[in-house]
Image (cartoon, rainbow, N blue to C red; front, side):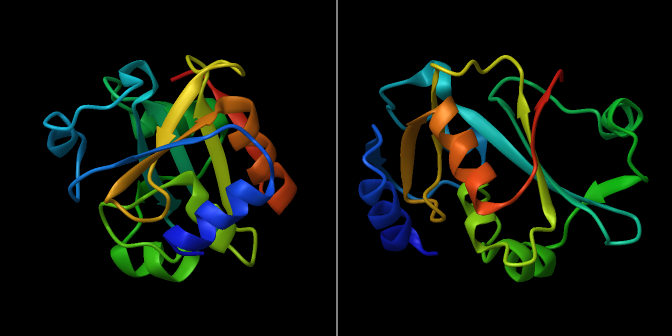
Length: 161
């Protein structure tokens, strides 16, 4: 799904959303120059894989948090982890570097990706993500995001990071 497909999908679900269009951003640093309506909902996404390329994880955390992959591995009993390559990102999520988004999971036909959401986000919170394109931020309720991914068939976990 591209950006327009995502917008149409969200609209068809009759769930609350807002869109903030902005310049292309490739990192959280780039986002600092963009005025967004829900700064407490800013999140970053890490797309990682295990050393055998059998398991993929999308980890979504509050903007200011750092994720220690060694601690994540121990906490969630995974094999050694590393950041997925841009080739993996395109193959599995249909995305490019700088546009990583949990909505890319809707492109995961094989249901390979496990989604881990920072427990600092609560069901009623508003959370921002790219609509599979880094020129906008799509705002959703956390509960709706989790429901969308679960309904697609991917696993969703709350993570204490």
